[in-house]
Length: 369
Image 1 (spheres, rainbow, N blue to C red):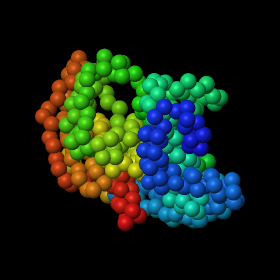
Image 2 (image 1 turned 60 degrees about the horizontal axis):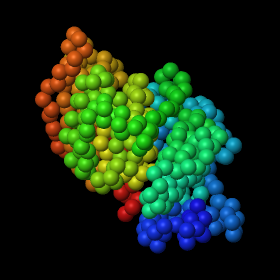
Image 3 (image 1 turned 120 degrees about the vertical axis):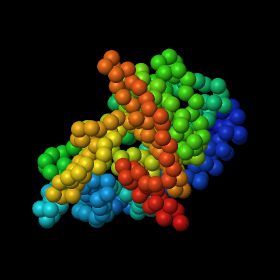
Image 4 (image 1 turned 135 degrees about the vertical axis):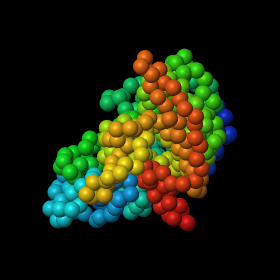
């Protein structure tokens, strides 16, 4: 794509101003550099040096999770890998969620799965096209519809076909029930919901600053949405500095699905090279109950406690270790109206439910150093 743009530079308004800016950004991006080099290798030398790997993760809860990286025969699929692993596993580990993620990597880019790297490179090309559009005053791309309708004129940075994965690539198994868990991720992108619709429903929202500064703003937004909708979809904003680079929503069916989706959140955070996160959700609050742990020493979750209460929970966190939490307890009236208590702000500490995110940031920092 960049070669085609360069060939048309004489007819592109302001090319000498906006193209070098994009080019410098692409040169500083590990994936974009790899994409150019990979293209040259395939055209001028040979095919990519492909290697097959599998990431195996066993998650009992937020505090007990192990992960391993295995070299495996290319012909084995994820279902066969689960069968092999479970056939050799002791009975005691058959609890929690096992995730098998099959990864194909180019040895020149070993930390990135090929489809993830391709999706990242695609988003970089969207930046290039948008820069050209801004320079020429074009408001909307007029490319024709495709079949299947994945790449559209809206130029989404992460089309739906690049977000969803099937069980040939990643498989989740509930070990207690020995059932497969289906994966579904809802990515919210710019333009998905017209701004006028959002503004009419909820009014104006002023969101700015880094992840820490946005916590009070997210609290105000969450309270307004809860008051109008009576429920709140769990949402996450991924930031690079003060810029939002990705947004997604999650639906938690149970604790296992929550663990799976927070790991997905960590995956997207790494792909976006995000160094900040704002996480907004409804949550149950409970108390430490006497005798509230079973024989396996697992505490009774608040959602199962009889005297639980509801709260709006917002967390802002950054890769450099800063953290800010807020809790706003609320009550539902007989007519459905919601009444909010005072918001409590906390600094420091650790959020177990976001442990996969913090672990990923730590790994990213170690690799960068």
